[in-house]
Image (cartoon, rainbow, N blue to C red; front, side, top):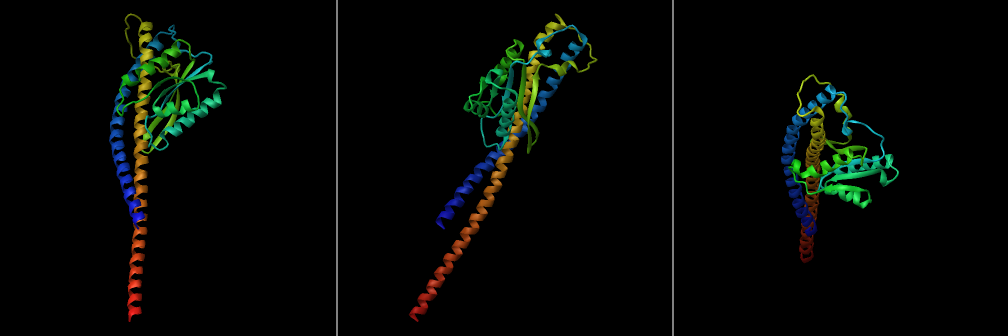
Length: 282
């Protein structure tokens, strides 16, 4: 009985912790969703301007808009710094590892830019080529947190070190559903296909504006993916901690039932011994 009481107490303590984590994740999820939604109009407007320039100036050629022979590929993978989020990290990392194994024969053919300690540790353990890493991203990330790695990834494509850049992150569907996504970020071919009717005047030139806007647009898409990933992380953690809390409740009920049975058996045994003693004296 003493051991069962100890198990009940231990499980109750665990339940309190998982319940607290669930509530914190729910609060952070709401904030992350709002931040992700707030970033979309800026990216959409930038895409509109870029598409307008590209559509109005057929002679403009920029390396970020043009496909080339694929010799080396870069992957920018967004994971979390902490665990306790169900399959949030494992599903994503399994997906990117499967892609790498299927597409590349050697580590010379690709490089990995990674955000988050979980992803960094995963790739380090397997001796995969990490070009740059960023860890210790807070629950409310700002653009400054990932500006260096985003700019580095874009610059490496611009200067020809890599011929394509893939963005790998968890897309937020709802609190209980997140989908690992692998999207080709560069070159920005889909931007040039967007039809625009808005007329703009550019200073000093359309080419000069594109030189500045294209890298910023790619960096903005990376930041938007980070915000999407954060919302997915909190949704996955809330779901995982909710399940853990329910399991803890079931365990406590099972332990309590076992304790009551053991206590009842002990009382019955004591009564039997008293009766047996009384009969022996009588």
